[in-house]
Length: 159
Image (cartoon, rainbow, N blue to C red; front, side, top):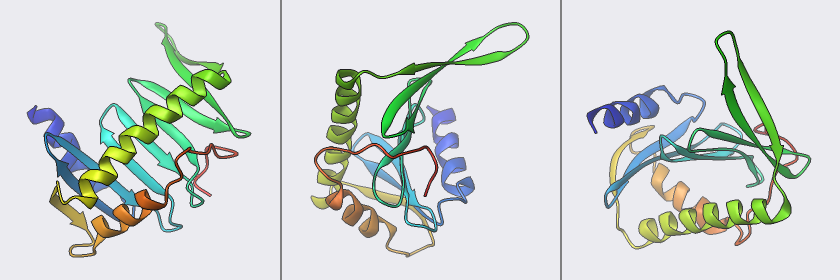
């Protein structure tokens, strides 16, 4: 548990690509969320669950249980690390429509729960940058504008 808290503190301090960011406790869960300069959002629900969006609110990358997901031409691709003694290879798997739908539905459900917690005041701000920057209010507004069905970006880049 202590190691996880250290990772959270490091993320809040070191996620400098997120020019606005906050760490928020929602019940037993601590999340870090924020925005890049261009308005693209990232939500770290746990060290093993991350969703990154472009400035249009489309999913561009995700990390879930040591698997990387990235957007390619509006489709989701899963990359699995395969380690050998001499190298690490990424094995590519294009998600079928049903797989992608299930993945996106689960992600949307989790983000909707976060939005509900924030809208109902069921949270505590642990830290934010800039200090008193009203980052949580911006995160709440962003979550409220996220469509019911998450769209996949054309590519994994932030723009």
